[in-house]
Length: 323
Image 1 (cartoon, rainbow, N blue to C red):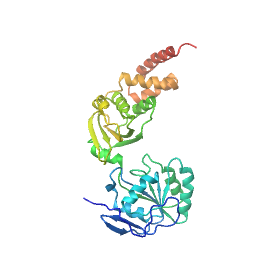
Image 2: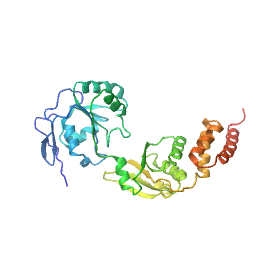
Image 3: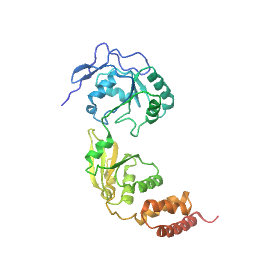
Image 4: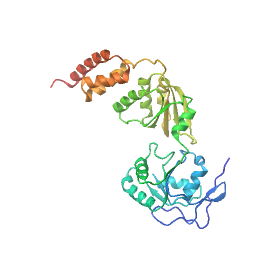
């Protein structure tokens, strides 16, 4: 087991956020030993950081974080826990969705001057459901180096423990928070011939499991909660079973849901799921457009869907009353 001490060189100051002076020493501490890091080469370094267990950081990541001029991070408080854990003196600068438009030009200016900058998210690999895409695109367009430092990822960690096919997978990220939009998106996802991976918050995971069971039936799935952390849990069962037991689910923490691909020759969409899809589409679209959308997603014959759409359109009109 690796024991990490937060010892630092005596001359090393605490992490700075607004100052522009270079660190007194480019060092990091591992196992009680202080190691010297070379100055990182100019460019933007995309550094994967632990998703929970701070011991999951790579040696290359530590060397880079100690060797760059600036660490751009979502939350300086969270990144400071990591740098202090490993004795890294770092200039931390916030880069998140709320300040990105103002922070990007400053980062590009520093890169043009030959600086080395690390981009980290609060946890995991940068740009995966985290800000950074626009920055990387503009850095590339400006001709600066972009260097990837692979490491922890909750997507890949969940896939590896879910005991579901991994030869093809589709990463959805976070689902829409509103019920109708979420069900519509899940219906679209149900047609993808690959294992599905998605994030969900604790306050919505029970509703999402109910929707998944209704739309995707009894597919095998895994609920991964608090991966790599003290209270890590992985529950594997058919979606229908997971939905039935959702009331007893511990909802605190971060969730990754992994759902098996549709079985070969899987049945077409259920009547209930088709009705939900059509009702949602008919609220915003014409009957013609709603039918076209449902045919594409459901796998059912157009004639059947058109007849059902006309029935539902009359019901919807009746519910809203005559003008």
